[in-house]
Length: 143
Image (cartoon, rainbow, N blue to C red; front, side):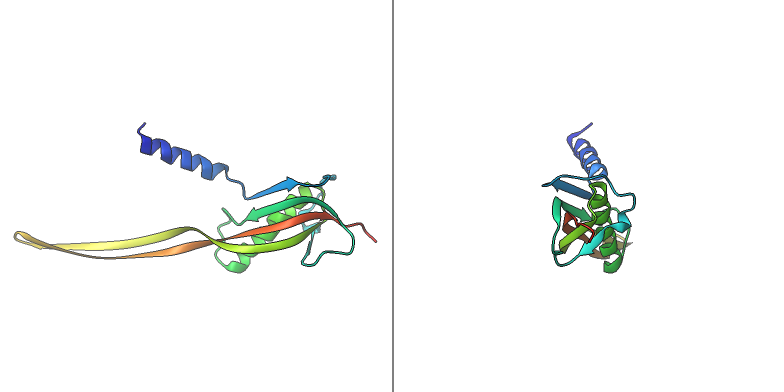
């Protein structure tokens, strides 16, 4: 296997094993929740809560095209990660858009006559944008 093939295999392995969500524990996890949809999303901190973890999630591999559907995927992944840690809420810290790649296409046409040839072509490339969200997994006591 030549060096370029090794590099391509390594890149493919990295892409296949890349995580769509992750966390860093900063508190004590609790029993996981059965349903991630029970995790409430907070934009402002509730009056009293316990911090469990710092969360990060992307829309990677979601096959979504609209910004709204990408945002829903990020939020649901943050909620699922929080539910696994026993958090019943996430305190949203922010969502950013990043360039995750590009898609391109093109064509060319060659005509020839005798010893002369002419080639014309055209190409197009469009950026692929992704969403990345950050939140704090929290546990809010029921009142």
